[in-house]
Amino acid sequence: MSTTNLAVIPGDGIGPEVTAEALKVLEVASPVKFEQTRYDLGAERYLATGEVLPESVLAEIKEQDAILLGAVGGKPNDPNLPPGILERGLLLKLRFELDHYVNLRPSRLFPGATSPLAAAVLDKGEIDFVVVREGTEGLYTGNGGAMRVGTPHEVATETSVNTAYGVERVVRDAFARAQARPRKKLTLVHKTNVLVNAGSLWWRITQQVAEEFPDVTVDYLHIDAVMIFLATDPSRFDVIVTDNIFGDIITDLAAAITGGIGLAASGNINSSREFPSMFEPVHGSAPDIAGQQKADPTAAILSGALLLEHLGHPEAAAAIDAAVLADLAERGSEPRTTSEVGDAIAARVTS
Ligand code: NAD
Ligand code: IPM
Ligand code: MN
Image (cartoon, rainbow, N blue to C red; front, side, top):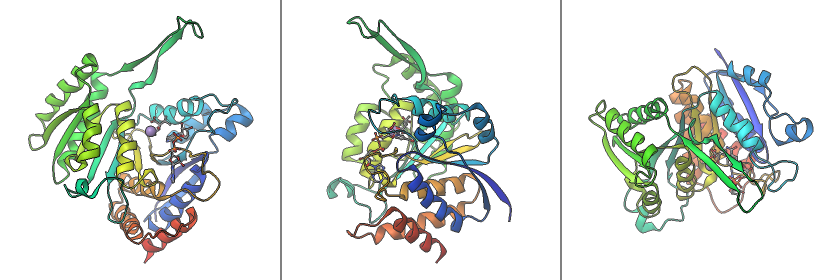
């Protein structure tokens, strides 16, 4: 049995609770043995030591085969923890330093999962799409600044950075994913009617790359219209490609319509495989339910399936998906603890 080096960053709030369950399921599903290294990064370490992500730790993580992350972020309005410190200094730093340019977020309404959407909408067709969110550019680069802070003349700017190189590589990745799916449809999402500079770049590159994928149907929607269709007919989507902030917003709504944020998995993927990819639930540290064994670990468990798929173990990934599907189909109204859900899914993988 070969060994795979796995960095585990449980993080804050419900992060450690859901990560424990993802590891439980990975252990039974994986054909390879994981050599785990745990990194105690997050709010606790920052508050105790002032450290967010020391360079030596980052260098070690870069040498791993993959990363499993829970969630980062402290309690809201903690005076000792200004907003953004952990989000920018830890989570986004990892995504940027490890060049996670494909932020992959599948959205599928599994049978048994409940959705707030009316039956009439669900009747239009199956909800099964994937958002390819650009992960290293856009509004997330920290380009901007503030002047005359605290005065009536304060000016605050955040500049969206979009490079031809960065857009082309994520668009090409999304086309390849669309080509591999039965419907072969790609929807570019932007706001080209207002954000004309970045919009034009995304539009032109999509048209150019489309020539390499003649069998993929290309559609375009403005971000605001996407909100309409996600609520009225999400079955129209197959692969969505979009920038960093639009992808962030779309995927929380997508999670809500496919059974809730507790089910939404993601992979931060370095498709060129120069650096380890990182797998994490879409949700955050949920301080409101942390430490109570109330969190649904399914998103973290499904993120483990994406990890196995990325590492070249599609059958093991499919076994986790099937176990989750079976568990969802039989979920009743009885509340279960986080670890009870993990146990039930792990048991289904082995049976
Ligand atoms: P959140 O996702 O943590 O919580 C939003 C709501 O969803 C809360 O009511 C929470 O209880 C619920 N929820 C989340 N995950 C759940 C689960 N697995 N099971 C059941 N319910 C769940 O978003 P937020 O409240 O906006 O952010 C809290 C903190 O997390 C902030 O510090 C934020 O920056 C951070 N955050 C981190 C990540 C990440 O690490 N990838 C993602 C989003 C937010
Ligand atoms: C997510 C989160 C992060 C993001 C934050 C916490 C930086 O919301 O993973 O979706 O905006 O990407
Ligand atoms: Mn988000």
